[in-house]
Amino acid sequence: MSASKLVEKKYLLPFVLVTSLFALWGFANDITNPMVAAFGTIMEISNARSALVQFAFYGGYATMAIPAALFIRKFSYKKGIILGLSLYALGALLFIPAAHFEVFGFFLVSLYILTFGLAFLETTANPYILSMGDTASSTRRLNLAQSFNPLGSIFGMFVAANFILASLQSDLRDSSGQLLFDGLSAAEKALVRTHDLAVIRDPYVALGLFVIAMIVLFVVVKMPNTRSDDPKSSAWSSFKRLYSNRVYRQGVVAQVFYVGVQIMCWTFIIHYAESIGLSKAEAQRYNMVAMGLFIAFRFFSTFLMRYVSAQKLLMFFALGGMLTTLGTIFIGGMPGLYSLVATSAFMSLMFPTIYGISLEGVGEDTTLGAAGLVMAIVGGALMPPLQGILIDFDSVLGLPAVNFSFVLPFVCFAVVARFGYTTAGTKNYTTR
Image 1 (cartoon, one colour):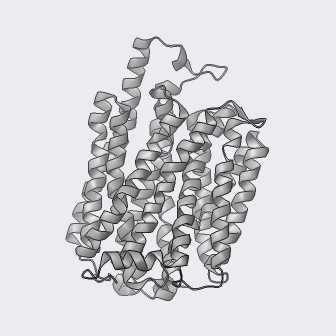
Image 2 (cartoon, rainbow, N blue to C red):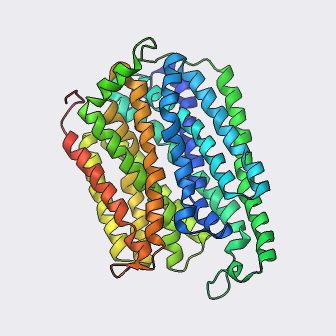
Image 3 (tube, rainbow, N blue to C red):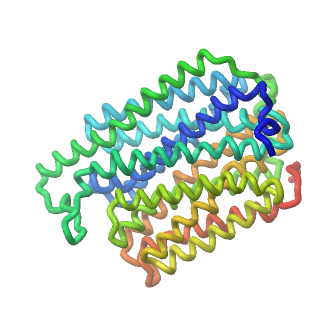
């Protein structure tokens, strides 16, 4: 199917601009995922506590998604984007005082505010893309726009690997693979900590400045008003209609578990690789390979949707993810790492597909419905700390703890597979 049929000519420039936001929050997501391991070493804290990076980052989505939707209903998609970019820039620039005071909690607050902005952007951009053309092609159009999200993600991974992780003095190792940082005196560790926190700070500051430039661009460009919501309608009535929609309810649950599995796999691949002797920077390169597969299969799955229903394809890909996760748990070593990398291919279509299926036919409730699905990103806040707790054990049921911890992604894939199965061959409808 040609791009002209997916996106009408009159929407082409707005589509391109809004699609750029998908790359922008993808960059933020995936420059941040490796920070769990980095902060764990630099600040000398447990895996469970360092995973609070993800709790703060994805918790911001849950906090701000509904307020963002109400703001957009009252004003417009464009104003929602501008406010979201402003919060994004503020959170990124707060890394300057966070690094100065060297307080882990300050970094968490900075990430929390940054994701207030991302909540606005995702609550706005996803339904905006859906509205730019024929509803029959809306899910494929969203998959196309979401295909640029991992391009931002892989650039974020590249920056993390080459400009952050590779420059961390706290991750230097001796010939046997042991961290040199562990043997330093308190004064020497303080110097290393100051250096490494500055290394983490600088890319976020550059990101904040870039986002300010994006704000200027969106201020001057005219954007269409394609909002389907009636700003005068009752938000409470929308909530009730959405809650009575079985497919939508199940979609929100599936999205919670999908985002959980995505963030766990991309965060703890570093811990998995370190457990078999690789450095953080080397591990992040495998994460980049995983993202490459994710990008390729995002485009491939968009093509497959011409021949296979979105619901069935979602189910098949979730089953594939369950199989590769089993390989990660039970095979171990480099083959287990390869299996974990392959998991990203099966995650590729899930977020936009669950999103599109869930919002099909919700009409005037689209913005609040989108907010519920953005709130579902809280799965990325809740599940990584649970996996971090498991990893802090030496072993579980005879398996290395880091291997066993991937039972959580396995369960998440099972929930997504069930959603694909139960919605296959159906349209979105209301039932109690």
